Length: 137
Image 1 (tube, rainbow, N blue to C red):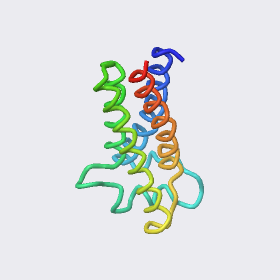
Image 2 (cartoon, rainbow, N blue to C red; image 1 turned 90 degrees about the horizontal axis):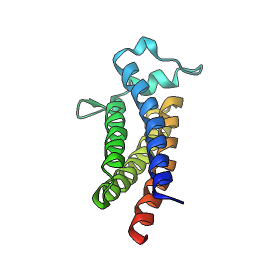
Image 3 (cartoon, helix red, strand yellow; image 1 turned 120 degrees about the horizontal axis):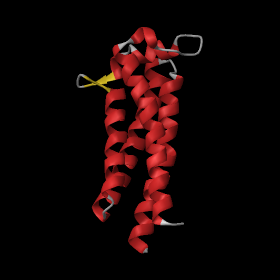
């Protein structure tokens, strides 16, 4: 696998996450635009106290995270690869925290939030492979 393919993979996954996070950020500020499955889980999660962290929407933090990964892909240095992998690992840990909150504290599921959390898994895999591939190559 080439470095170019790995960088493209990281960028594609980050762009997918960026799209979901951008939508979630938009509906944080425009709740009436939220499109969700029946049952109100998205609304419940979006309106919960956990939708913000120190006054910043969690969705906006996700959006900034994906932008940071895209910037690091463009930078393409050993430090950038390490930072991208570290960001993805941190995001995966935070995603687990958010899933636990939905399951046990908020008692509601936001499908859009779960899609975002799922995007983080391939992001972690691809950034890690990109990091290891370039370090060992």
